[in-house]
Structure formats: structure tokens, C-alpha cells
Image (cartoon, rainbow, N blue to C red; front, side, top):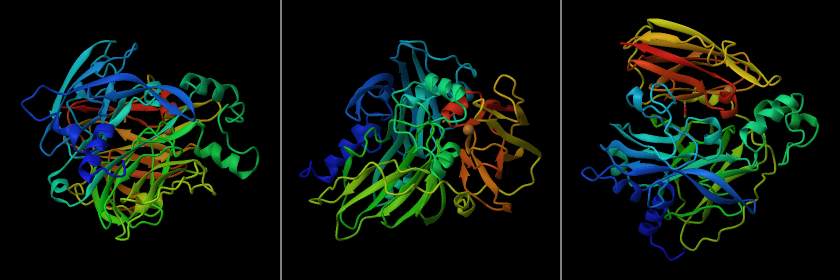
Length: 472
Ligand code: C2O
Ligand code: CU
């Protein structure tokens, strides 16, 4: 490993992550569309074999990287023994290709192959099963679309896909949450929150599921990925929070870092100290490697807790020290000040809204049931608009937990946070902390039924979704 040139490390990284170089180039126009297979794989987690799912190309590349101007073209094969459907999170395909079961295309049967072909939007995006239980079993991978600017910039790109992992299936987690509503940690086989005290109380509001491991590019801190970087070099860290129910706070260990984009959309760069990502969100960080070199852990801390995961950026010859999987103090929870501080580099054109919606995020731990306007999917009231209309959606969280809300088929701009009107970030997933209110603006896009839901997978599983219906 130590003697590999930067070029071969890059290629290796690409093959492993689909994040860099090699994966994308196999997909050059003129050849047949690359195959992405939903399949099973074995990871070693905490010394135990874990049978998980994955989205792999035949050469082992996870997910896909596209070079500037390429369309997203893929043949998706369901290699699982259960139906699945994959959503291209951050992309805006025609609604038939959006990847939500029966909206309108059915799930892929075992063995079925389906073709996808649509114009790709640049940025750090991802692909994942739109089935909560499958997403939780790691049926998720990067979907990186490089821009012309990425090609020009003199920087190394590193993709970091974060996840949480539990040996316990989602159905059992839900059953336990419903059976023991007063203490969601009781009886858990994994490392629960410390019993009693303020920590356990805080953990109940922030983290309602305890996991057996937290993963960075499928690995824990007992054997983290080490990425070779250059002394004095610049690294574009494309971070994807693919976790099912964990908010991560990014810790660059004091290395200077700036946020260039969130959810694939450029923002006015700000310092990345204490930046957090909710489930479904992405952030591009420009990290400066000191001229003196060294080994630099890029950590992701579980909010309100001590668990952590991460990778190591290391220059040639640097000594890689062991990193404890638990930090010394609980990581600070996500704070809405972060959203209020972001400014879009490419804001929406300013125009008055033609329609406004007031949406309440609702639900309870006991029973474990999460809803929108008090209604679960199936009893939901769709938000309706005409294509081209400027819409504002005020989201008010009237529940005791934060909810990362994701809208399909659109990008929205955060135009009010912390009670102030702002020209905030353009995104597709926004974290709405408990008891707070945010306002989003967007232009209604292509006609169709577009999902609007919480990206916390157990919340989604209990029905925390509605739809945005756009008429032509
Ligand atoms: Cu990333 Cu509807 O999901
Ligand atoms: Cu939620």
C-alpha cells in the first residue's frame, strides 16, 4: 500500500467506492450501459460476518461516477431474492425512472433488469433502495457526477459514504420500540446508551435506534480506509450520509476545511468546523493537507453520542495510529444555526410564491408512529401544484425528534431559518429540528407524483411521507 503511486491509489479508490475515476470511465458513451446489480455481500463487522446488500458494477465498483456531460445510463439488475427499487437521490429523472415502488413503475422482481437513461445533474449524489428495510441493510452507493469545474480544479476527489449498521432487522427494532416505548434502549443487544442520567434522555430524542456499528466506506475504525494524499495537496471530500437513522457531525481534526456544496449544490464557501449531515444529505468539503504531511483522520461523530467512524487521509510514509471507535465526549447535536449560515451560490430567481403550504411534522415515540400533518402514508393529503409555479412550503416540526425531509424530483431553497428570511442553501434534503420551523421555496417541476418524506428509515417505515403532485 505504501509504495503505490497516487494514480494507482486513485484507481483503487475508484474501484472500491465508485467515487473516483475508474468506475466512470467504463461508462463512456458508445458502449453499452453499465450494469448495476443489487446484490448481497459479506462484511466483517465487529469480528462477525455481516450479510449485507450492495449496488455493484461487475468490476466491483460500488455505485457510479459520471464524467462531465455524461447521461446517467444504467441497466439495473435485481440480483436479490426479494423485490427492490432504487432511487437516484439528488437526480431529477422523468418520474417513471425516479425509483419509488408503484409511483408509477413497479418494483423490480428478482432477476429483473430495467434500463435507466436520463440527463445527469452534477454533484455528490447517491443511489439507494426505496425500501426502508433494504436501505438499512446497506443497499446504497455513491452516485457522483463530476462537473467541468471538478476537472479543472487541482484537487484529489475522495468519496466518503457513511452508514449505520445493525445485525437486528428493522422489523425487530420497530417491534421493540412499540413494545417498550418508555425506554427504547431496554433489552438491546448492542451498545446502548448509558443507563440513567441526562445522556440517556438526550439519546432518546436524538437517536431512537442503537446500531452495532457505524461505517465509513463499509469499514469501522478498527480497520479504516487509508487514502493516500499529497503533502500540501487539496482534497475534495464528497461526504454522503447514507445512514438510516444517524446524524453525523464531521470532524476534520483541526485541518482547515471549507464547505463548497451541500446536496450537490454550490454554496458560498464557509468554514466546515462542526458541520453536521442528516440522513440523505451530502456535503463537499475542500480540505487542505499540511505541507509537512502526516495522517489525518476524517471522522464522522454520531450526534449526542460517543460512537464514531471515519477514514484516514495520509501522506507517504506517515504513521497511521489506531483511532478509538468511541470518542471521549458526546458529539454536539445538530444545531439549526448551521442551516441559517448557509448561502446558495446559485439561488433561485426571486419571485413571489403562487402557492403556500403549511406542513406539520408530527408523531410520537409511544406508540412509535411518525406522520405528516398527523397522517400516515395512505391517509395523506397530497400537496398539489401546477408545473412552473413558485411554491413555498413552511415546515413546522411539532414532534420531539428532528426529521430530515426529502423532496423527490426537485431542488428547493431554504428561504427562512431561525425566524429570519435568508437566501439559504439549495438542497433536496433539509433537517428540521424538533420544535423548529423552516420555509422552502421551489419551482414545481415535471408533472408527476413526487414523494416528500422523512429520510429516517424507521420513521419512513411507519408512514412519514406524503406526495407533491405536479400537474402539467
Ligand atoms: Cu433518498 Cu425518497 O429517498
Ligand atoms: Cu423523521
